[in-house]
Image 1: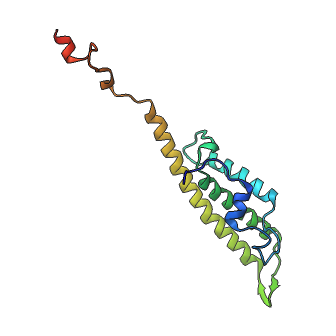
Image 2: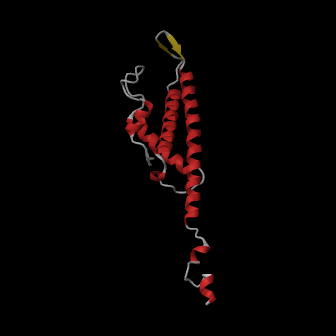
Image 3: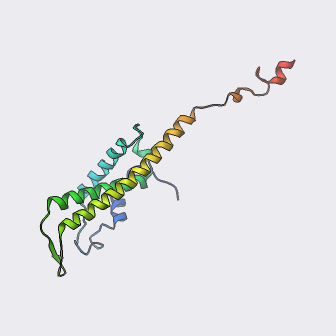
Length: 158
């Protein structure tokens, strides 16, 4: 399968997370709104620009799976923020009391892990891209020593 590049589509994010009403029996709806995903896509793109080396690499040149990881990291950061803002002592679900503080910590842990993975992958890709750009213009001085040129030892003997 060929590598695809650029930002993932909103449906790709939903498919990866299985964020559909028929998959979310707990919420009976999509957990993340379209606005959440659109903001996460934007933030992942901006986050890419802040990672070293600081160059203007086009998002369209970055493998889609790297940008998907960055987008999902930003979604869980947003979920953490929502859970923190809406913090209350807890909720009862199926007779079990679940403190929302624990849900916020879970989202924060997911965000930290995914963002660290995104940063590692993006930095490695950006470095490799910079090395490729740097080496593209290098030519061997032996390139000019073709048969019949003035640099050809056989040609200068005559």
